[in-house]
Amino acid sequence: MSAHPNLNMFAAGHDNGNCCFQDSNVKVPPYCVSDNLVFCTPGDKTIHRRDMKATGKDQAFGKLSWWGCSCNSYYALHYNAAGKLLYLRHAYTIGTKIYDVYKLEPDCCYLEMMKGSIYLMCSKNE
Image (cartoon, rainbow, N blue to C red; front, side, top):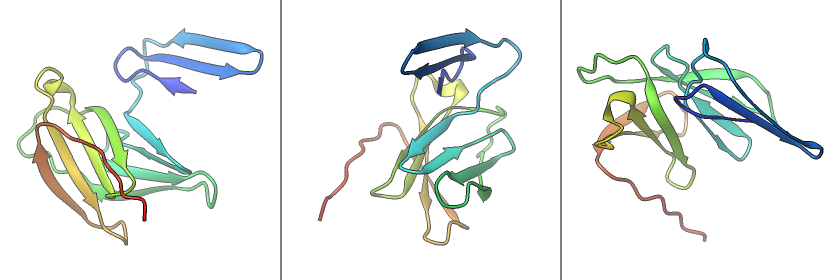
């Protein structure tokens, strides 16, 4: 299943075909899937992580910094597994593409925030 971040459109596919539908009352929070982990920001100013294989439990592990922002939602979320970095873009910066970059610590209890104007994902295979 997949969702569009600002049009409230959903698409689901299977072997026999696919289905696309729109819901005008629900806003889908930005999310990202990496291996068995799903990261999302459901609107309560925290980052949630769900391990789909091991426990299946939803864990809120970091409070987001807003730095004077009056908005209440994000437009996009991306995760770099090699660098343990989350890239979040506010809904009001769609044209300017300014990102909030969060570095995940090993214990997943502390988030270090940085700002950026572009991002490049790279990884090193050792």
